[in-house]
Amino acid sequence: MKQHVNLTLDPKVTQRAKYLARERNTSVSALVEDLLSQASTGTRRKRKNSQTFTTQWKGRLALAGKREKRYRALAKHYDLE
Image (cartoon, rainbow, N blue to C red; front, side, top):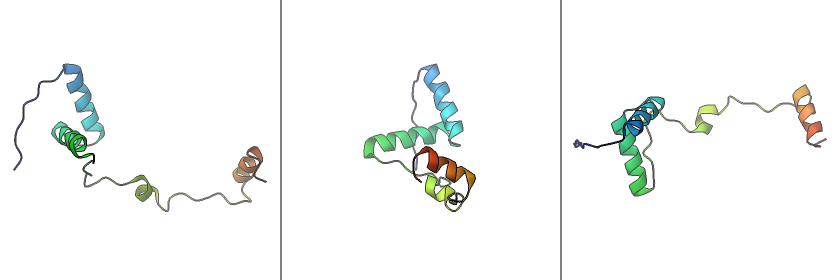
C-alpha cells in the first residue's frame, strides 16, 4: 500500500512539475516516485504505455534506393559515389 507524503516546494518548481507530468501523461506523484526511484537505484521504472524509440519506429522507415534522387544527392554531397 502506498503512503502519503507532504512536500513543500517552490511555486515555480510545482508549476514545472505539473507541466512535466502532463507532458509525460502521468501524475505529479508518479513523476516524483519515478525520479526518487531512479535516484536511489540508478534505474527508472517504465510506464505501461511507454515504448522504446526502436519499437515505436520499427518498420516505419525505409532506406532510399540508390536510384532515388535524394539518395544520389546525398551520396554526391558526402562523396559516397
